[in-house]
Amino acid sequence: MSTDLTILTGDYTIDAAHSTIGFTVRHAMVTNVKGKFGDFSGSLHLDGSDPSASTASIDVKMESIDTGSADRDGHLKSADFFKTEEFPTMTFRSTKAESLGGDDYRITGDLEILGTTRPVTIDLEFNGAAKDPFGNERVGFEGKAEIKRSDWGLTWNAALETGGVLVSDKIKLHFDISAIRNA
Image (cartoon, rainbow, N blue to C red; front, top):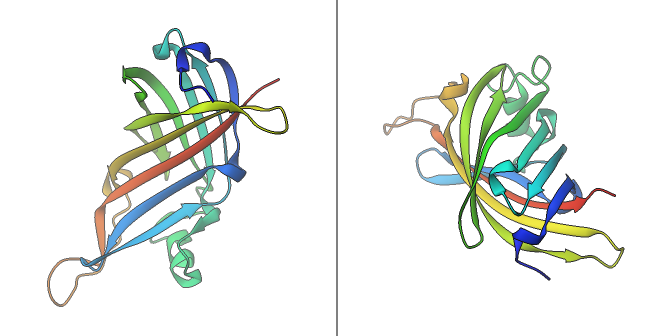
């Protein structure tokens, strides 16, 4: 296994079966609800000698949201939140990539939700590269970012008797990405 990104240059396809795009949101001011999206696709272009020339593109099917509760998932797909019939896909397109030193990188890009596009910065850690038993060259990254859902018009909420709101505005995004080099 190699952790030297400088030797990796090429185009990669995200392996959704071995990757996760997830989120955490504070619920009722006292606990966290975690969720993920089960249907997504994406590609990476890595330039190991010039990380700033690297790019990422991801498309997420909003209907695939899974928080472990069918009722909650149904509410998230409704007009109160993601309006999945009208806006079936969330997209991310990178606009800037940079090395922070060591295995740490930062990628900035445009995140589109509900037809609204806003910039997001994702901190990434390069986990390494390896050839799997099937001969595929793989790379792995872990990433995280925080957004305010209200920036994309996601403002539904309910006041709590004890003060505060049911759903926090701050959303923590997390990514575990495995990608396979294109032939």
